[in-house]
Length: 362
Image (cartoon, rainbow, N blue to C red; front, side):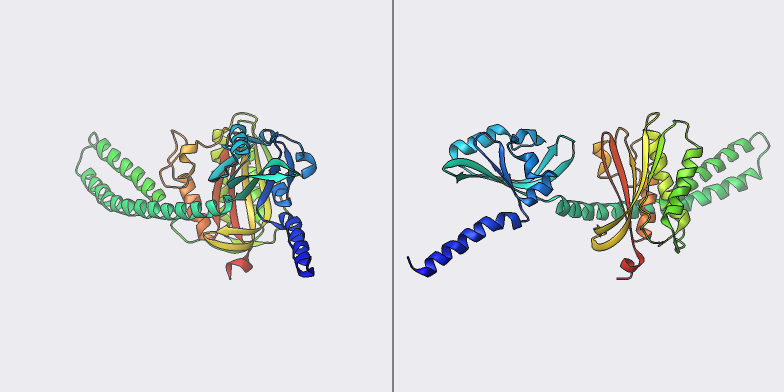
């Protein structure tokens, strides 16, 4: 056999053996009993388990809920017809979820049929696309509400002024009606002002983020009728940031208070900080930023409002105005940051991302 043919066979074998461990795509190999017999490093990272823990484990003991069920896989072994699915949500037994593209195909190893599963995680791309759409929708809703608020506020001033003039012409008994008109006009004006959001730009100063969070922690401790447990989990390595102390404190207090109202007695809220890397904020990649998380173990936010949670007039409570989180979103945008939320029963996490000063100038 010519030497060049032998060399090509060696090269081909070398790459075939080496490539699976270098692939970004997660690869899982199942035997005819649908038990795991191999996972590459990318699959270990995706499943958060090593090959030693996954080896010989039935696939239905790894995934709690997935459209790739045993019947479908057995049919693949029988027919050899591969299939692909996009935008598949896979749930683990700890109820964590990931979104992937899956390709399943039949392969032969040692003269026995096996199943090759390839997973490509698409959570990040999907999240970026979803956030861009939500950002556009939020801005449109905010502009619409602000325009409507201005249209309401102008005649309210005239209504109040007319009531004051009329009050001068009435006797004591009749004045109660003008007083009611003035009171309701003031109430509506206050509501409109809240719809318009913060009425002045933030006063930015270089300061310690943990000093603000500690104030929120102490204020909540002083007024804690439900006896909710408050925990702190700080990253002391976070440097000082430039932000408006009052506005950021208002944002965190609002989120904490919302959590308290949704929680039962003796639940838990955790205030956590981390230095985060390679985050996407408003469509831009940020290498380093501060991550502030407000986490609770309550019932979670209703799924049907999660995508519109930060829109004006959207609230998960019957008594809520739906303005608080919209104002919080506006404040964080004024800081070139990002406010987001992930929620499921037993775990709700609001996350504030604030880029370091060196990132803002780029």
